[in-house]
Image 1 (cartoon, rainbow, N blue to C red):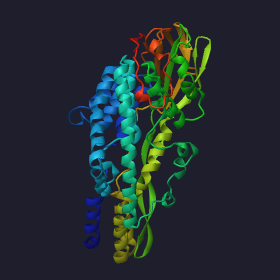
Image 2: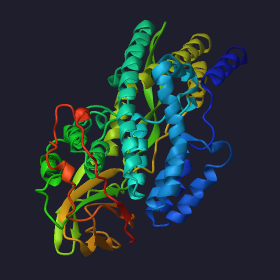
Image 3: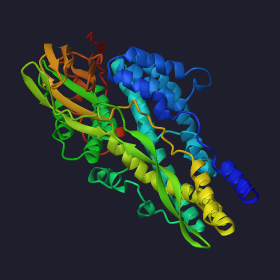
Image 4: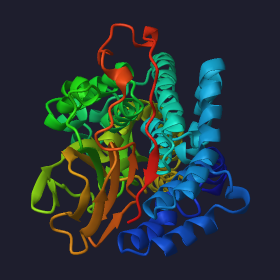
Length: 489
């Protein structure tokens, strides 16, 4: 028995590798729990302990760190962590443009499992990284540099789109050459329905989100650039149609940026975020492998998306006696499933290569040693199967809602209905104002509000500038930029 099985088993161990050590999800579990229970200080200490030494420049851990700092209203430190992470994504962008085959070459790690590959970030995470940097700069009162990050976000989306098109073409070609058909119907026990529900199928792609484009519109508008604001609002509507809040962003743009604007009122944008992004967990499923003795089933690990229970729905917020309806602008649970759906054919291709190797082991053991050998071969093949890659930016919010309204400057009682600690004093002031909030079932984090300009101040240069010009870049106008003011809580 040893003569046949030990060498084969050793080969599988070398090719497949054993998954050891904690997964990313387990590494950040305590941090996320501390955050949701209201102990953001301890959560930050935990993530800082993980981002030392060799992990100092780690992409994923710095994204987690930046988000936790943002929840704690430590915007400068948040931005610093995001900038470290952004270096890695910039390197990915450069490779995607100059040498895409190098990135696709990570397929060479297929036999070791996806967890052995360099983590490049989910595509929607790459987009959200520059979006978050822009939002941090907004909270710091720096609209000019936020504008730069927004422009970089749009450029990043274009790089992602072009690279994924090339990658899909290459993967399809490789699958055809290997005679492998990527079909989720062949994955016995995999919850395919989670990837094929209507919300997932409605998404145009796995990287663009309406929040990023709405914030682009808002920043351009606050900088008195309505010609550039309009495309941002329009794209947000395209990504999340039939939402009155988004439609009004575009429809009311001309009025808000002209002398017709309501005098003495503040245009307030509330960004309400709930819960955390979903988790990816490993699940073993049966994968059919053809052999000389017919099809045999091999156990292979695939990732499954599990939504966060704290990412609940928020239908309205209250200011004094006034209720403002909210709109769900981005759902990262849905985006994560869309990203996985798009990624699954490649995962299947890499899994098929591993499965074929394991299938050969089982088949040879069956041939030479009968049922006992086949059993041992199956046990060893299963034992050496690495866990599915569970790396995701977990501290991102699960859902993002917005509300927007003109309000008279003054002091208000701001409340999130249903939250025991969901009340806070809010001083409304300025021409434009942004109010960030992060909500968990047991804790509400009120971020630092920030306002720009003075209520009722209208820049004269905007009077004759249309909001939807044919060529925004050709418009020549003097830009009057509002003065930022960070409002104390």
